[in-house]
Image (cartoon, rainbow, N blue to C red; front, top):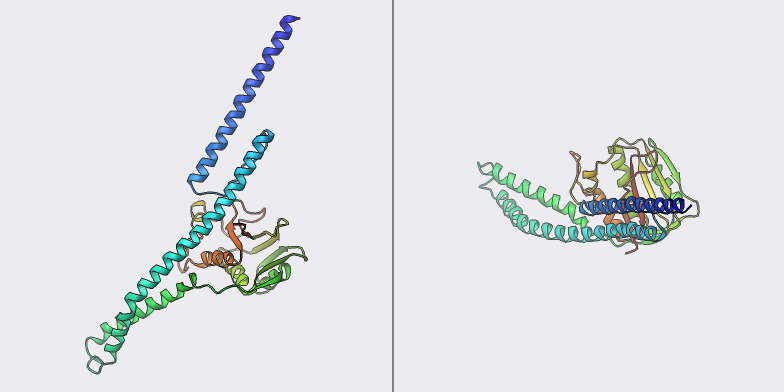
Length: 286
């Protein structure tokens, strides 16, 4: 009898040791995954809590939420950094091109230059400097956004008004009729139109908009081309684009427009079921 009890105790101890070893391996793997996510600036990680003890579950949930908050903070810092850089670049470029444009324009007005061998070269200088000035002015809107005019919007009706502009697409709008959002109507419309145009350029045929929680977060999804991981990390950087004719400011501008309204735009790590790309529009809690 004593031998049986001793054997049972030994078996229990061994089982506990094996379970503890496997559990520690699980925690080690989680730590490695989070470290890799941070190293690759993927702050949208959310690791499951299945198989964890209650204290470990609380810690994992806190780390998951922390990753989301870090992503928001990075978004803020990136927007501010690019705004400062854009202001400096546009200012310096305009300082350099304005006198070139003025001088070349003055030379073109001289009688001695007209129909001379120099006219073509001076006109090329004038046209190039004028084109560069126009190009720079088009990007000044990155740092000169108008102040939002807030009003309470009926989100469902607002989204349906966007859908009516693109009747060739299939729209799946799942938003409670009672949902309201305090935002600038024209600026928010510009954001949704930007997202829709991007989806169309990615060959999307269906766009879905749905509310997912009581805080009013919206998921804006489409079935266009999947965004590769290396591209996903860059899409909110101004002037970054994978399109031959793209300017690369649409998503960056959309994020800035929403930040001025206390909202945040981000790309979901995993798209909603039935879609290939999902953006999250939510209240900015920073």
